[in-house]
Image (tube, rainbow, N blue to C red):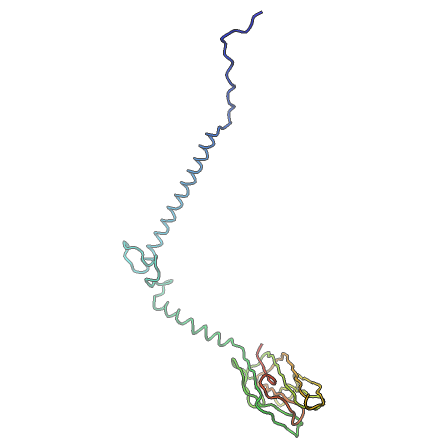
Length: 247
């Protein structure tokens, strides 16, 4: 029998299969990828700088600067007045200054008509068995409403919100008031408010409040009427009042 021969070396390791990567090869691939992305970014930045330079010189030429001078107008617009879309500087400045008054006029035109009235005194019409209140303006805004003594005239038609309150100081068992509208010799009742009153004079204090929206034509005349002659009411501004504003 033949035994193993001495001095014979073991066979070498089997070679690596093609397609496998060592860590060194992976590092090289990642480095090349990063360098490629960096080159692309540098090229993009250069294009942007070129476009910015052309834009600065274009704006500088509009401002009347020399071609070789630094574009001050592009870097600091407050240091010069450049034409805007072919307009000269004086026209641009005039347009800017004229905007504010126009806006103020538009805001003034949009202000809704409003009146809040305070009582001054009362007047009893015995033949009609009613008491009317004389009013003064507490607050007002806009145009379209005019107060004259005991009535309010609507000069601009539209939808209005009317509110009223009366403090009664009368022992008559029932007290109340009516908001009336007069137009073209026609009378109509818009709102009514009724309250039961205590019989004791010392306790005869009660308020009645009513409100609602109504379509009022130009020329309508409004009146707060209490269907009692010599009706006793409170004349403090927070106790008795009448208001109307355009919706």
